[in-house]
Length: 296
Ligand code: G1P
Image 1 (cartoon, rainbow, N blue to C red):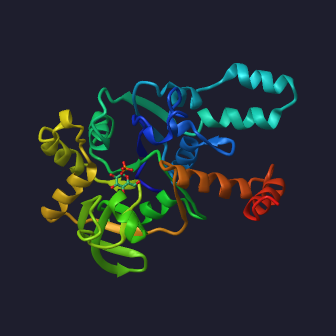
Image 2 (tube, helix red, strand yellow):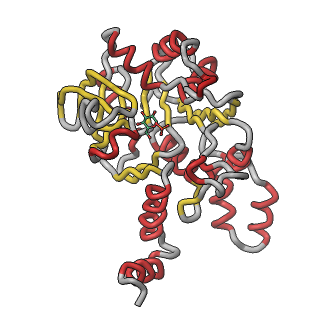
Image 3 (cartoon, protein in one colour):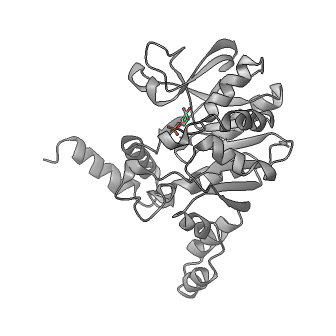
């Protein structure tokens, strides 16, 4: 049994990369075939042993609360029309975990989002999932990280090797390989230029953190120039913790990662999940083949 029971999912961001689709709906509710991105994340957490899901939300994100709420009328409606399977699927969503919703009052970054819910965490390790990163894998990505945490009892980050052109979009680590897929992290830099990147290993938006991170975020939070659009970025706290001698680990997880915060990444997810979806895979495969041949 894992002793990581809580996950924080920051979902207050505007989703500007998907405008106008996200003008009146949260980007986390965009569907990959028939399930919103956010449900994939919650299911990953639950399949990894998490029982408490803490969302840090903002204005315009109420659809996320509704999605994880009980929808009695809808279930009744489906049952009356003999759609029992669908009714059961809908019922299960609100029972996936205990849910809490806390609002982040200003868009001050993911580091600030974590501080908004520190009081719900206490002195225990916690998982964090960003709303964008969906991983398709046999063993849930978070579960793979928890296994590493159980060995070292220190923060753990999932790593993905990215191309040179992509390093400036992610947190990039430098470190030593200490075991299969496992790295001891020595440096971490947020969105470096190609020249400054310590490696090509990007940190995917799923963390296991120890309570120490909250005190470091508090030290940093008053030194951020929010007026100039700067944010409290967790990577800065991780870098400070490393400088203070804190151990941190990286794990090259097994699975395919989709960056659903990006149009191309999101479309790749839709295509791949569509090709696996039992309801549509035959027709969709035919369509994709045709499209790839230039639709002659
Ligand atoms: C955030 C983190 C970055 C990480 C990325 C993963 O960036 O700051 O370190 O690599 O998520 O998706 P953002 O996507 O908010 O720009």
